[in-house]
Length: 621
Image (tube, rainbow, N blue to C red; front, side):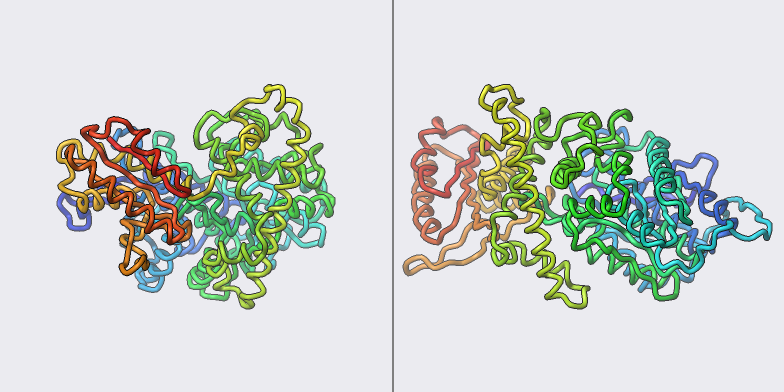
């Protein structure tokens, strides 16, 4: 875990040595002072509705903003701001925040709900201490002239409007059903705000019905770092929606997100915990509903009516409701804040892949021009390992969903389906719907990849496609590499970097000590193996690995070569393991730490091991 942080908010200070610091690195976040580094344009809401917010709602917005600023400024595995310290993935955040409604935020059940939401969203550790705010921002005085002309009081839901395909589909479908639209957006930078406003303008031109758009400017200072995962953004997003819903006495807030993204099954076995986004996961929305019901002191619902829809079905909703010409004004890219403003889609992230495949599947490519993509999703080069893995893993996952039977799919992702339906009334039926949803998604991926391969077969045969493009990698069958091998490679890559550093000054004392070091390094990189589990019978004895990932039938064995004469015992141990583990139908990765390079011929040493199916050997020096 990275060095724990204490975030001092709204100008609050603590004396040196104060026990609240607890050895944490102190970071100041301020949205109130003259030298603020977190920017909240509260007037985007108050001026729009010509009304003040209650103290509790202002507190809510500031808390959500500080959490988001801390999240997207604290890099996982790299540095804070301009510093050069390198730290592992997990994070530990403590906030000291002055508030106006102290009596409410001090309640244990409120803090428990708040921490529970953030822990689930990000897999980081959160804690809060609140104190009474002494000096507030200056308030605007509003004349008693009423609200805007349109009457939106008591609307069913405030709609979250990100500017992507899914939120557009929700707005278009609602408009086509003659519903009044109250759309709320988070506006982090000017050009993203312009995109959202442009899309809203086109929406109004297409559907001349009562609708309002409330974009709220919230961002952080430019000198802070950028952490791309930003797992807590939906907390900020939902807080904005809740504030507007309270002003209008709406029944709640509505997200629009297709079920494949909401559930977010891991596309690769290394995509775990904080690496798998939970922004609109069914549990997230249930926790939001509970929390905001406490904040508003009334029944309050956060929902997602598209939980059982695929991305291609979302696009069909848009076209079936007369909004297909609006598709070109949407943006789905995960990297839109980190690239040129002239093209809205990078073409390499999972969102771009998903969008383009869905667009082609339903024949809407005329409304989604190829020129809007920096790199062609299927034939464009992929420079980074991350970009290559994203394409290969997306293809593998989609084809796997297509090829697995519904029963096999239910078994493989049993934990994810059970978790997702925990708060749904008819959980058994919901689980079946989610399984069917992913089968439909898989068939769409298969169909589009088939078509793209056929379209580019001549270029493939002539060698004219970029070797790193998605289609070339699929043609090379990189997507068929077993997931257990990918996961073993991931473990090796982490240990290859970590062990030499950990043992640079003091070598591991023995093999058990090496195992402890490996466990610590893997955990800090969000990889947690089951230690010395499971026990299995072989002949008249029990056997167990050093570590395991039973979902992949992968066992890990560590070997430590400390002296020349130690090579022979290690080979004998491995020889015995080959029979015991192989007979138990397990894949095995032997990770051999050989700091003195006593094994002089890696290939010769490995040959009799790797010729056995399901066996791998890695060397770390």
